[in-house]
Length: 401
Ligand code: ADP
Image (cartoon, rainbow, N blue to C red; front, side, top):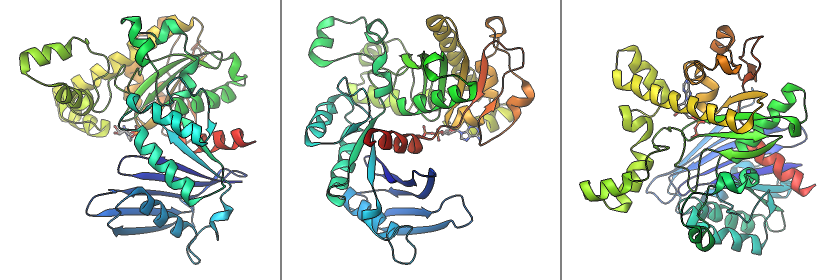
């Protein structure tokens, strides 16, 4: 079975074609700057193998339809293509950011499902319309091929009401479904499943804290395999300190900025999403640059690292209290997989709760899962690379089977 995975953004499309017999990636690609004067497509056939072949196209790409058609032409190119015909694609899996309360699991796309995704647009006005563009283009390009929507929010639909409700007037929940949803669910679910396998236990018996630290950051409390709390909220702004997003702040900051700085709601929203987080604190949002600056004595860069890792530690402590027994803490995504300093600092002082790091193991870099806790640590600590495309392809396959 061959599954095409599509992650459609407002001006970009990421795609991968996977052979699900071996889970090998046949093609991965990125269409960028859709709708701008100069568009770009980068297509990698057999990525990461000795057969890898990279093709780049630069030309105006006015819309998602044109972008996806260019990609499909390359994938099925008689000389360079990895398949002969579109008909070899058995299913298409789509990343959809927000499934609201309607979607608890990956879902085969029908007209009714498209309408239900349209209804969640007010909850994710930047993401869901772009995801819908990708779906509409794929339905047109692959008529009759099953299409599956895999939602970032679905894994978190098991969170109980006492954890997803905000202490706001209840009428807001009734009228507009204002509540915590959580995101990165596909990644949290994937690494939780991998961790259970590594612990040698069924996922249904595992209590885990999964820590996704990339540009966006979130943490999830997983109880007996189910998400019971997560740090991102109504939108992907709450919780941990992210690259450019603030995470938790006093919600009164909006009123303060409006009254004292004359900022309107659009300016405040843009500031909290794009000019805050690590970037707001020290001017840099890539953790590699921050470490380089700390090495040169940059005190603000050190502060940014300290604020982020302190927040991580606080949430880990909170989720220990939520779960009671914890089998393992799992780090994943760009920072979580690569940054031993962030991992060490995020777990500093937790020895009294049964978390001890093996400094040597933590300093290692691996593309494979790595256990970094000491032998006498009662809670295991793992670094497990996430793979959202593979997760979407697996979910797509399992729904169709
Ligand atoms: P996204 O949330 O966009 O999927 P990623 O999970 O790819 O992001 O994470 C990107 C971030 O990971 C970068 O902004 C950078 O801060 C961090 N990162 C990537 N490589 C390293 C590294 N070797 N050391 C520390 N941080 C890294």
